[in-house]
Length: 102
Image (cartoon, rainbow, N blue to C red; front, side):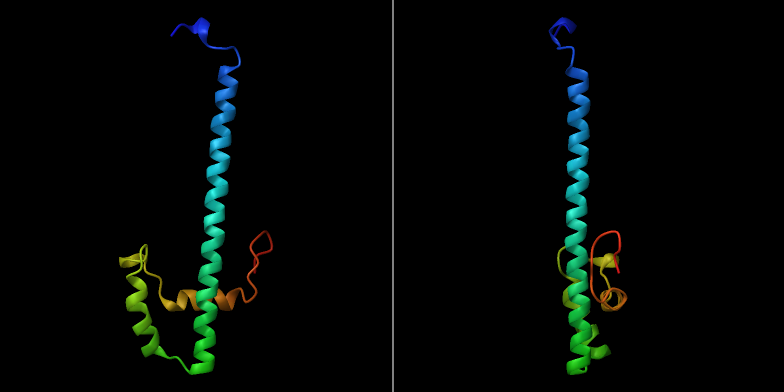
């Protein structure tokens, strides 16, 4: 293809397109992270509530951890312990995602 066939504004259009793609990827990653934060907070809140209402203790948490670690994305060393969810729910009792989180 000859350089004469490429429009003069092609380079700036391509740069704008690449920038837009990167912004969209970043926004998508932030949206996924926000939803995961809501999920983790919900799990932690549920654990704390059940510990309070039903007296859940270490045996229940050990039993819960085994099947929870078998969920997709929670295999092996990346499997979060129930205490991580609990701590998150205690640290941020009224989850608000944004600049003033917790």
